[in-house]
Image (cartoon, rainbow, N blue to C red; front, side, top):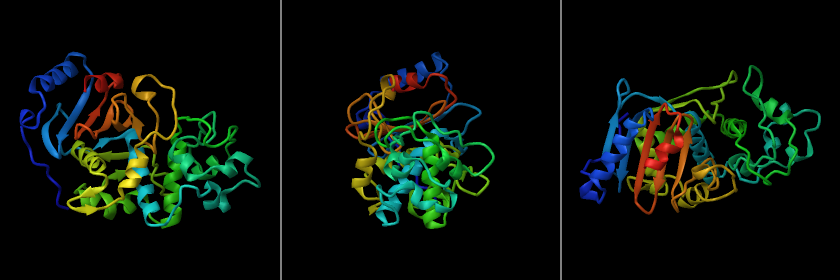
Length: 305
């Protein structure tokens, strides 16, 4: 597969302070933030990139929960193709896995509630152990009205993957390959699966840093790539906008979209994963930052940027 290569230019030529960028890098090292690699784009041009040994540009990296933003994008393609609707009920996809009668709020749960992590659970269901993951989720008790509040819920993202595979007959990886990975020049990635062959959705995706940057540029361009509108801009606008209130600190308390986080600077949003895996999109500044890390201070990386 031919990879898409961004052109390169100096930061100053695109209005970015070289001194500011130098400070960013020096502070990463001084604070021992554990960054493994980064790519910084402006207007679709690489103005800085680098990797810390033993990490390399071509090395795929575990994305942890940054995987969730790719799962959301797969749902966007399925909605665009008329395969799914946001108000489809979760239980409707798995009649054979249902307990005799699911709880009332489980019956009300829709795809939109999975996307916004507002399923109605006050405790995340513990489904990630040997067994039938979707059946475990459907047996879980939903004590609150779906849509009423945010609760970070990786099990909900798994259900998005399971629903997509049930409807299309394809894993997330296979479904996204002709729609996203191949057009963007991203090598077909490894995505960990459950015993039934369902990609885990909420984690388990492995990509190199430049591929994350391509994904961010695709989002910045509202789904357009090389003159082709791959995914409709209305979906990306909706997916990355404020959909539900959350109550974290700083960049974890600015609201949540469809598996995307809102950031403190107005208009900025991101996908992120544990230990500092980032795809940060800054529409007003026409910038994308992709980061892979093994950091114990994720907020510090965002603060420095």
